[in-house]
Every structure is written in structure tokens, then in C-alpha cells.
Length: 555
Image (cartoon, rainbow, N blue to C red; front, side, top):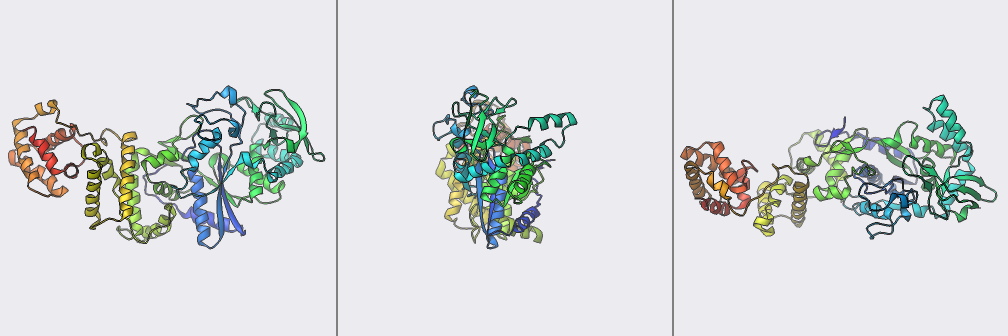
């Protein structure tokens, strides 16, 4: 079952387990890698892979080791399909590398670069700083072409590995067909010099432009383009080539000497592409390959995300509604073998939960010794920047959800001042540091984005400029008696949230009005609904004088 991200369940032992496996490699410099094909907007799930790499790098650095991270953008992959909403024609661009397809928005050098950059620009917010490797550029280097030559020379060995791993669960008949298809198979394809394609056919009917022969003495490769029909033999140095997926991966591992690479369950299943790559590493390149770290997928609202079907929640989308540190927290506290189900409608609860966790780290929240130890270990790994020695007060996200919707009514400066007053009361301080003021602005924006995009009707607060006539007509004489008492109570002077809450009950009892009816009357006057945010704090947000004037307008 997927882990619902609001559950307070921690399985952080995986961090030390992976760290120990990586340390066993005992290399001069540890390299942790991740990668993604930019076939469209890249969903937030890739960050689980990147954060795993980043946190292991951080732990290695803490131990005095040399370590770095790398992110490989597979923009040399050919177009097989376009996600919904793309303006480009699949018939026109199918089979062409993403690096050669134009950016439909005109802001980047290619289609692949556009969607890769959309992801990369969020890295600083998430505390991620990998070296970026573009596969399209990598294949232009002599070093990568030498890896291709190695694979072509070792084609027979690679054929044996492919048969062993790909056909392991085939029926005898399927296996025989596969073995026969591999007799003249080579592990690389050619970008056709005439039409620029790596393959013909779209998803489900793909025919790669595979090399059909290779002479290691002359370094000449023969190929056939299945799209335009070109057949030719040319020196490898004059061709744009690309290794097939299961071989491309281990070739890059070997080239960069990758120490560890996390991978989703689709690649990590027994006998899958990762295991194939490790066998290629051993038998073709003569080394053990990276430490394999499988992880389960990240879901959105209980659904698997997929670019091709347009089920995408991007890192940009996350940053619009929640802090990056919360996302790191959710990824790190959950065991790698558990699916993480992100529920955007739960963001206010999750942010406030993380704020409490942060206060535990600073010993400002009551917690048992186990939770305190957990906070000491995990909190610094959740933050994008080194943690401060002193706690920086944060505005409650739930509070921000309500007050952010009042800016049009009250004005930005008044809203910020209300936030400052609330935080001073909550944290018992007389002033707030600059970082807290900056956080107020960020929280207000995130909360407003959240309520507009994911909030329910109950979360939304709209204060009409005047009390509607229909509401006025519902007021009874007893209601008006109650409201007259409330006006006096509100105008008597400063009052806390609890004082106002109590005043509603007292005013209702003083005139013989049912308490439930009293609250309904107040909410109808303020937001034209029968219920809403807790009334005492809400009246203080609006301002007692303003509320008193509004009540007086109907008396």
C-alpha cells in the first residue's frame, strides 16, 4: 500500500544502509548519479532519486570523503510520443532526438533542453547541485565514442547477456524467436545523415536504425535507416551513433566511474535494465558497476505519474504551494521500498507538521528522546541550506491560508502586520528576524496558490464588500439584539482570540439566542456562509473595529 505522506512514520535507517554499501567501494572520489529523459514536463518523482543521491553525498562529505553528484539528461533519446497538449506534430518529429527537436516555446535551444531546464532551475530551492551531463553532447566526445567502440567489438558478449536477461521469462517459442532476431543485432543505432532520425515508427511500432555490421579494423559501420531507406557504410567518426538503452547506461557508468545510482522500480526489477547493465559492466567493461539502490515511485493523489499520459505534478508545481524542505522531509523519512503518495489537499497539515519537527530540532517542542534524536539526524538533511544555530519563527501555513485571502480587503501591509502580531503572540517574542519577515511573504504566496488550486469550498474565504440584501432579510429581532451586544463587546477595546470567542457565547446567552444560531449569524454577515474559520481569530484578522462597523451597518 502506498504511504500517505501525512502519516508520521519514519524509516530513515535506509540512509545509513546505503551509505555503508557506498563506503565499501573505498574510492578516491564517490560519484552519485541520476538521470532522466526530457520527453515533456518532468514530474516531481525524479526528485526522490536526486535527493537520495544528494543526502548520501552530504553524509560522505560529513565523513571527510570526496563526493559529488551528477544528473544525466538523456536528451539524445528519440521522440516516441508527445505528451498531451504539445503543439508539435508527432508525424514530423518522431524518431528524431529530443536535442534536435525545436523548442515549441522558443526560449531554449531544443525541446529536450526546455523541459530539462524547467527541472534544473528548481534544483537550488531543493538543495540539489549536481553536475549536468547532456547525453547529446556526451556522444560528441571521443571518450564516449570509445565506449561505443568497446561495445561494438564486444557485440557477441552483449548478445549473450541480452538473451540471458531479456528472454529469461520467455516461452520456448518466444525465446527461439528472440535468439534468431539477435543473430545480426548490434547494440547501437545511427542518426540517419539524410533524415536525422534514430528510428522509424512511434510508440508500439518502433524500428531502430541499428548498425548492421562493424569492422573493428577499419572502424567502419554499416547501417540502414528504416524511415527514409538510406543504407550506407561510413567510418564511425563520421556518424552520429547512440547505444541502445540497456547498453548506453552501463557505458556511461563506466565512462564516469559512477559509484552509486538510485533507480525506480521499473528499472530495478530482477533481471531488468539495471541488472543487465551490471552484467555488461562486469563482462564488457571489466568492473563491478555502481551500487544499485532501488526505490518505489512517488504518486500524486494515488495515481502513478507519467509524462506521456499527462499525469504530471512538477517540482515547479510543488514550489508554488509548499516549501522544498517539506518535500525532502517526505522523501527522507520514508523507506525506499515504500511508495510515497503526495496528496496536495493535505499540504497545510504537512507544512505545519514539518514546522513542529523543525522546532523539535531546536528543542522548542515537547518530544520524547527518540523523536529528538531523529530530528537531530534528519532535519539538517531536509534543509536546502546549512541550518542556523538559532530558530527562525515560521508563519503557520493554516493561518496563512485564511489571511492570504483577505489581502484584497485589508491590503498587503495590514495582512503582513496581522501575521507579525500573530507570530509574536505564538512565539512570545517582541520582534522577528529578517528571515521571518521573508518567510511571511513566501508563506502568503504559497498558501494563496494552494487554496486557489487545491482548497475545498470550506477552505475558501470570500468577504463581500457589503452584507448582501438576502442576508439582511434573514435577520430576526432576536438576531439583531445579539448583534447589538456584539458591537458593544467588540468596541470595548483590545481582546484576544479566546476573549472574542467567549464574547459570542455570552452575547447569545444574554439575549436568549441559541449559541449555534449566533455563530451562523456572524458567519453570514462576514462571509455569507453558515460556517468558516474559527470565529475569534478570524474577527481579529479582519479587525474588531471593521467587524463592529459591518455589524452596525445591518442594525
